[in-house]
Length: 553
Image (cartoon, rainbow, N blue to C red; front, top):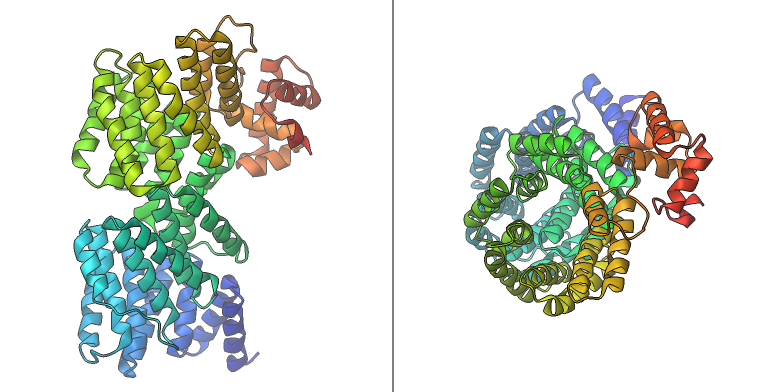
């Protein structure tokens, strides 16, 4: 195959989102004879999508220089934008700043160039990273609407996305979400480059999660999963960050084994190259899953990794300390975190944990927790997200129950439970169910209390939420109901897959374990359940609610 045919093949592979083929074919052509700048950009994008960060940076430098020397200022600035972002993703902030300064000098030679807007986007991102949200919005307000025919699609979508993020960060939630939705619609039309598509998915889903707009986040996450499935060799930085967002949604939806697997992949991916600065988010999600499953030593380690990568480990770390009986340290940590945080939506992440931690002190807790619950109600009223209303109702009900006002606790708790079920968030719905059961018990309705607590325990056992299931077991001790499963969280995962008919090889692949480890888990399961076969273990799982009946299909 001659050189021109090889380049044409590489271009076609890029259009088909076949990044490995693009990288190999165009890379081989470039080794034989230097590619033209437009093809260098394609090769850089392929390197970016494959996570080859050093190659992507080197190629973008060449493309920038080639465009600049040819007088193609706009194309050079576009390369400069992705180059600055690539360097920043790799933690090379000084180099990123130096290239931004170089790009600004080039832009000054052609001030009317539309691609000068790329530099404003970088400026806005710097303000966002520094928490300077007012300056971020001022920068975006300098840009016109990029809606003219033939406009750079990446620039148009990136401008809309960044403006939406600026509006949201300045408290104009409705307008900001509308802009973010608009950016996603541009992505859906297919005119945006792959790396820009990955960036917009990650930013929009992350913003929706931060705002607790779970329905939006779930909808866009499903679209993202389809997009990723169409290009299985996409392993770059945005794929890792997308995994982090997916982990959070899988956790909320109750798919905890899948969430753990995705979290581990995200941690490995984001610490291997691009995106190491975002690895803290992956470790935080992994730590949360370990905490909820009762794997406290693993959780502590993952929270430490979170801090090592520059991310705040609160409120999860404070909740872990509470679970380990370190109540005073837990309360001090959550008070400190709240004192340092002013932005309402960030406080909304801390306040539910504050209510839970402060109520652990039966004497002074309710008076201190009540203002936190009240603040949550105000944030929910102002921002309107369904999940925020559920969180606020749950906190309000918990405080009223702790104050001895069980009858007044039930209405907000019932509403919170309904909202969590609407959102398909089983763990939080079960936690609300425990509070409803305790309120019923306080009102003398022991029959309803047992029903609520049993339903919650069934969910906790199915999820593998061992600490919650253990607590409910203590609350229902002596009522003749089935005992807590003797299996560890990992053994619960294995027995559920056995019940689904999986082989040892399939279980090993799904849980990212060796077959030898799977065999050891199965041996332990047989011993703990006093069974002699996989069929008997599966029967136990069905009988004790560890697996739904239709899961065997």
